[in-house]
Image 1 (cartoon, rainbow, N blue to C red):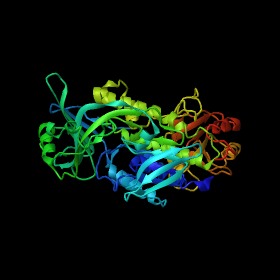
Image 2 (tube, one colour):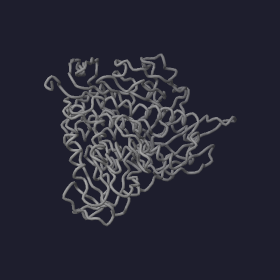
Image 3 (cartoon, one colour):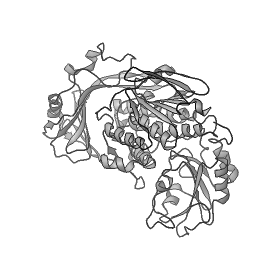
Image 4 (cartoon, rainbow, N blue to C red):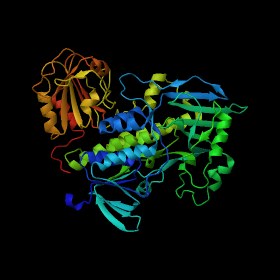
Length: 547
């Protein structure tokens, strides 16, 4: 029974992934505790690339503006080989995509999410370690130990492990973590330089040996601040982490990934690399932090079992190529949280939470395979058109076709069940004197039934959706250009610029799109019937099923 649980969900790990999970749970009214064994947030700019899809997620959550004010834009990359400038790469997306690429230090991402979480009366319990857990058919019993050594036993409905590459949750759950480590080692440094290269562009400079192999590398990602970059480069022998493999900082689980302890690079080490590879003579200054790091590629055999799940680095680790890691982890948490919230509220399909593995593990497998391929063979190994490559790197092509939660694809052109619901502009409303975006309609909502067509729409379908879901589906009507926004039924908007009709390729008549809480299309029905709609909703909801 509900009173037997001290909380609904325990989240282990307060990085960007764990904080996203906690925010999304609390935003939906779910009781949640988030613990982290570290006493304070780490001051390192580790994961810095923010993909457009992540910004769309933050838009829906309500923190996009805060993130945009803290971030810097990423316009593209300048590349140099043996001192010779290569063609510039510009990061250009279709005009309907609402956000571009950005860079933001990981500690800033955590600060923003942490502050947003505090609005719901929840804070990170720092210095608190997950010691062990056990689960049964009704819940999970979690043993926690605080910094003082005091131990506490917490009863929760679910446990989510977002506790990184060396995840205690993953180990205790008995998940395999297959893969291996790259032999190369790198060093990171957060510095300022005085070159006059165009701001907002990353810099990649490399040197090839007589056999054409890369033997020296410098990668610089812009950060907020004048001339500030996070630089990664090959490590000199005297700083090699491999020399310390058997030392006190060696991992005890065989997973070699991330920042290493021991001797850290000095400003002079970074300057030596710049002297060799910088496209312009420059002087580095203001070293904020530095480290040596190693890279592995691994993925779990399953993303959870029973009432315990893993997300982010606890589930998948891989090269940082294309800034896919943290962003993929944030989408893990985004996908899982709405499902757990619905399951806790009751009246849902018994396999709703289990669909997390079905949807997210294929994504993780693809990201690991692709980033390893790019790290070893270069992005040119993928012979796809530049537009598709850009959309894929932006994580706008992530989808769930074939998921048990979405309908089969139809023969109609345009977005299909399992695809991301694209944004569009130019929607007019009855009272608003300014054009709206589709994402304005979806922001802060859960399941939304979009009905496109002319005339009075939505009465029967909206009633059927609301009744079957027990009030958990909202309905919005979108009418063709020139129609009226007045409505006696669900709220109505006019596709004044025709962007919705173009991007969703709607035929004549009425078309219904059921958009899930995570912004993916669950069903596309044309023409829609109440029977078709409720058949789709039965994939997620099970009225009167209890908790």
